[in-house]
Image 1 (spheres, rainbow over the protein chains, first blue to last red):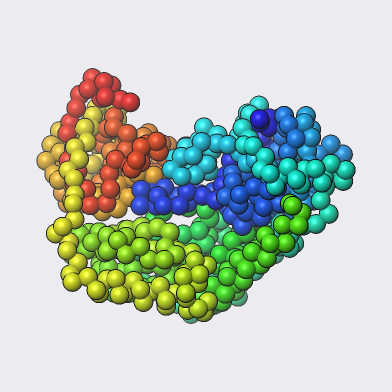
Image 2: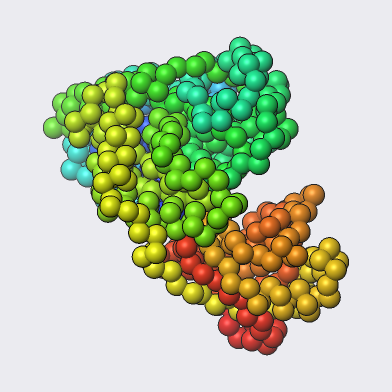
Length: 328
Length: 237
């Protein structure tokens, strides 16, 4: 069965957890810019965590479902509705045959991930259903969704069928995951960073400004990276660096001195100095940044970053365990 | 060998400090290191990404802990195993790196070569002389990146080195053969870019339906062969 895209909105595409394993061929990781949010949303509708869902940027998305589906979404502060029912983030909802899901423009943040029971059945390309918008492959014909597209859906899992029966009366589940998992957007976030290998190429004043000053998100930002206006960070040396791997979270400083924070669609290698890296558990906040947002960076240690990530994974394991009660 | 964090879920193994002095030897050492690390199948490692002087290792800290590392020792635990893999190898047998020679047909017609005149002017050569010199050279793929399948080619005759255009083009057609500074390259997919375009190949350098998806890999040797416009059209897929 399928869902019809009545309105595709500003930028909506099929994404899963990304295309790992092909960086050596120049293929970006891609996938949901907040993979944790998609994992959680998938769990809420009885999917495998790695199932493909939809990512919408700035909303304006309207879907009509051809059959009964569970849906859960997470991300920025969006108004989401099905008919007259308001759908808060992180709550699984039962959408019936012929009903619609509308995600309007966000008040805070810019992206949302929508998991649908059964998952989006785009073909696997290089091990992933994600849309690679630069290589034009994966997802729906390698492109963003358009008005009128049909999105093919997989079969509801046994878990999804059980929860569907439970939600026949109330429609929306009252329980939800921890707030930060389903609503990661902040108006003035502090993103935690660890030092990058080129930290010492910048003088004391530059690294102090990085962690003391405010940076403003530039409109010239996309799924590849967030560009910042504000303080310009100048280098000590002018050595031409040899290109090497970069990763989502890398903060590189081009000759302009204005930082660029790389996101999931970033290229695989780069030659700008890497002053720092946003830690993995703060990438969900980074994925919500939009033009004009004010951001600060705060330094933590690599051990802190690992501990936070391991804690989050342990909490996710507990959450997964706790979900059993709703699916059995 | 320096091993440095690249964020909390990747690290970079610096195989050589620089590249310029001995590009071929550096490339072979990088590829040999990659192969050692690939064969070692270290726990928690997701993928390896070689570049000019480095091999990047992407890993999942959660899997590293599951494999026995203490949560406050994830990086050191992995770095120690990487060092062991590299130092236990009797020697990094760079000479055993298998490389294939790939011939790339290129049509140098003016329509496909908007910057050929500029390259020729800077080199003090005629356009045909540039093409002949370009074709007479054997190149090596130093790494793949920028866009899917884009090969950074070393070996460009120094005479042909041409600075990148001050304003990048918004859209460069797939198959464009180009010079950027001292390097040569081929744009596999339509993309923006600042390199000087001197021709176009009908070959597909990147096809996500193929295994592997890229025509070229780091280490491959490359030669260019001039073809007519007619041959270009016949071979265009």
